[in-house]
Amino acid sequence: MNHPSPGAPGPGQPQGMPPERQTRLTYGGYLKVPELLALQQTRHQPPHHDETLFIIAHQVYELWFKQALHELHRVCDLLDRDEPLRAAQLLERIHKIQHLLIEQIPLLETMFSSEFAKFRSSLSTASGFQSVQFRKLEFLVGAKNPRMLELVGDDDAARREMATYLDRPTPYDHFIRHLAREDHNVFGIPADALSRDTTRPHELDERLVNALEVLYRKQDEHAVNERYYPQFLMAERLLEFEEKLLIWRFHHVKMVERMIGGGVGTGGSSGAKYLAATLNIRLYPDLWAVRDRLGGLGRGYGG
Ligand code: HEM
Image 1 (tube, rainbow, N blue to C red):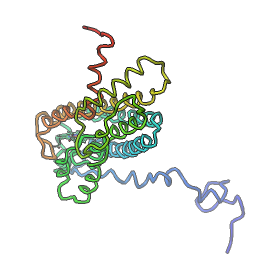
Image 2 (tube, rainbow, N blue to C red):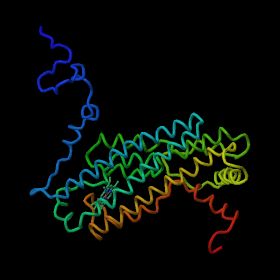
Image 3 (tube, rainbow, N blue to C red):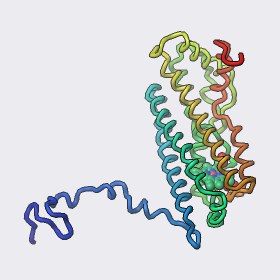
Image 4 (cartoon, rainbow, N blue to C red):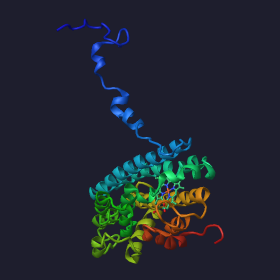
């Protein structure tokens, strides 16, 4: 067998490229770029210029949903390992992902409603309504509505996959369990709060609001980096997660109104009317309620 002399260029190889580099991993190979770029398959005939924007935007969302789920699992693990500061740090990363999700909406809004109308029929019955990863995210963080399992139609595998997320404890459950382990009679977390039915959304629990009030007041009394600062930070970041999810929902419903007015959705819902109702979903009522107690600490505008 003939071996090329070291440094001799092979067929199609640039002059001076060492042969061992021929087999080295490339950017496109590592990231599977050719495979990725083959996935944007428009359906409309004749082709419509804006359909690629629509497809790519949705695909990018799905990738970020994947990463957000990956991070949320880790946040729960870190809380189980009583590492609240690291959990809070990762939640900040999730906030940045949420930021991207929110910021992508104006990009889609550069498409005129009249242009969207020209290729909308290509979506047929497909809708973000059926996004398995979005439902997994919702279930995991506490928006536990089992009726959502029906939306994936005949796709039983997707339904089974989504269902495994319905009974998972939320990051708030993991947080309260962590706080109970750190309690030492400081917060007074009741034992039954640790074994709640995790297939249900969180309901207001005044006893946990009491515990949060203790946590927040401690932070108010002491300097940053005091004993319970990581737990305080974690609580604030959970609230921020919920707030950002609501901002995304709000922005999405306004975009939908811009695109299709009061029309029904391709997924079969009442469209913007249905979406506006999702703005009432509350994930962590205790974290909101504790503000009423803390408001007494000082008066803001109008007070
Ligand atoms: C032109 C742009 C868009 C329009 C007109 C639109 C329209 C709608 C409508 C009408 C619904 C209600 C369900 C239905 O009956 O179909 C819906 C739900 C949904 N859409 Fe969009 N959408 C757009 C872009 C996006 C993008 C980029 C995403 C990102 C993944 C997305 C994700 C979702 C999700 C997750 C739901 C379910 C929300 C829930 O049930 O709370 N949508 N969309």
